[in-house]
Length: 260
Image (cartoon, rainbow, N blue to C red; front, top):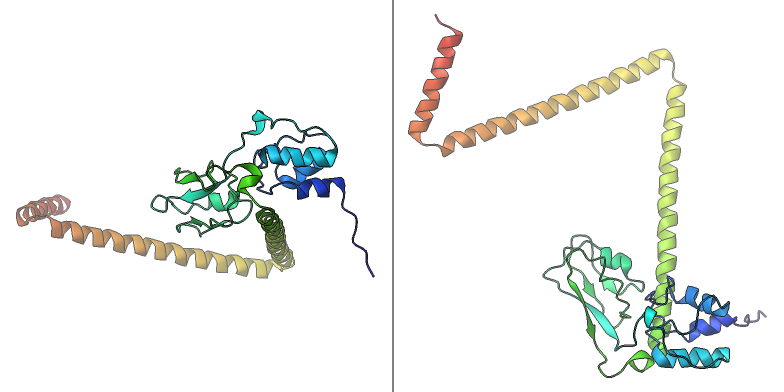
């Protein structure tokens, strides 16, 4: 029967953080901040979303006095949620990439929207937006810090953040595997071509030349047809008098070419 490992100090500190993953503490997420507090490389008053209550909780755990929140990291405030002006959204996906808890849904070149119940109010989606269509709106007026948040919300946010990290890692591994397979296939093709006899290499070169020539002919034909269509359209747009002038000029040019 396996035993549950005892929680480290960093684990217990992380349990007391609101898990907004806002980076205002100066660290990329709540877990790295918890580890920094545990090894005393960061102070325990650097979490604005936790506010004064959060500092008091950490102080109690660490056996230290409660101190004011460090204003360098931000101020305690009501909990906001991100709101996207869907009439301005261009579907760039930068906000989706920035959201640490996957609270924004949408697709490339499609309108995005925020799932309010999942948003932690971290603000991280605001700065990357190239059209300034994201606003942070307070949803807990009069309630700040832990009074505006709950342990259930914190636990859910941490779970979503961990899921996102695992998803991004998996996607990177899959992409790396695809690139490796593509490189291996290219190397194999190069090695196979190196084993060809001079006659086979010459035949392969002729085949490539024929294909390239055919593609070039198709391109030129397409351009010619497009030019003819444009010319026909242009003639249809001018008046009869202008057409007559064009015809006279063309006749003069023909006579100059063939004076007889």
